Length: 269
Image (cartoon, rainbow, N blue to C red):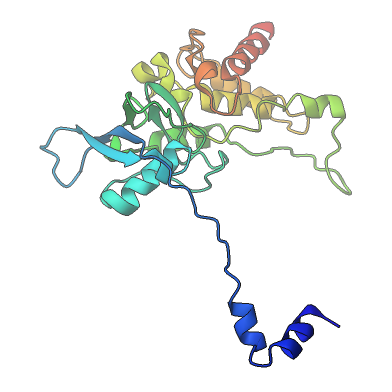
């Protein structure tokens, strides 16, 4: 006989409902995290008031009420503090390159940059340097994409296989590692002093690395034509191997090495 049936026989007035509700329930009480305030100083400029100079606007948020990345803080500020704050973002995974900006002096992706949890230090956020600004943290990348288009970033081969697909050896495929992963965030190009000074003619690290990606591809038969386009004083040779591009790449790529390989191939011809 169950305990409930035995108690009901000895205490006729005791109901199942009263027995079940008479036992107190223990619930865990959530602990309240302490407030950790941090200041973010963010570049602001509005094209609707072009006469007004750009300013740094200060926002203060509780780090224990937001995610760990700079992009999380920006989204919290836009959603809860100031909806006029403007910036690009999309994937939040370091794939699309949309949220490229200058954070505490370094070009990087806001979605991959962790917030410094030292509340005594502020974080300064600017758009990518030496670019025309659309609004706030949004740079105008029109010229950057035009330069990328100029290298014809697609496979060119006038002799496609009669059947099936292009065959590539494992050794030839490995030559593309460290090149195809570029997400065109423009962090490297906008960190390059040569690109700051000559971006109307110098293609910049990102575009040149993508140019080499197709020069190195064994399936492409237009390698000579691609190299001929770079055989001038400005398109590539403005690179002075400062290595800012390789230091700042948020994907850990090495544009300087790709540019050096192009120079080596052109010198060997």
